[in-house]
Image (cartoon, rainbow, N blue to C red; front, side, top):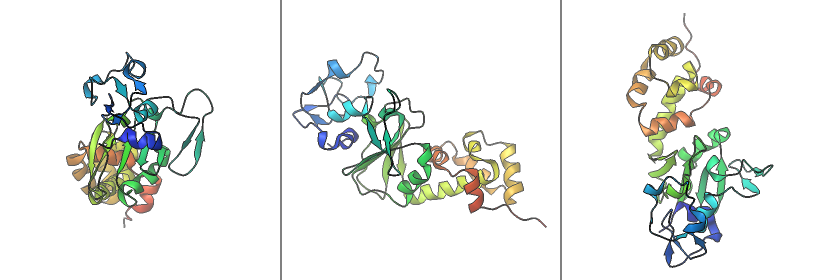
Length: 241
């Protein structure tokens, strides 16, 4: 069984006859539960092998404090500057058999491409962390296809069909052009309708968004959406009389 932590560990994965407490990967007896499962760990109800006494290298690394350097999605290398700021839980991740790269909200344009037009060859895992406070990699799915594939968005699994995500992002872009990006996660109300009617000359976008806003794919689209300036470049305001 291939797991996201195995991809995270890469060549450092420690195969063996045991199973990882967290993700269920095969592992050896190098890392023990006594040492690497803290008493403060609160997600015991979702681990794959709760009766295991061992932990795989990928989970040790992904649940840790990070290394001294980290490759980012744009190709830059982030260096450790102090004791904080490199913990894997603080970042989103693209994991493949060839690479392990981190990203943040600053890389949202690249993240949109990866999920729509530059989808990796499977197997791969994509984890998007919004809060930076939760350990997500050990519970993330591994995608075995790039036509329809699951990703981890915060603490829920979202199934991606690229053409549907592209359509949902287009809808979000129309709204952002009129209202700004924060409106995507706010309750759809009169102000959105007024803004869209004034900007686009109709209320088509908020009518549709009101119906789909609570769907996991829409929450993901809101995270991935363009900023207001870029949205307005794509959808300029209607010219009146």
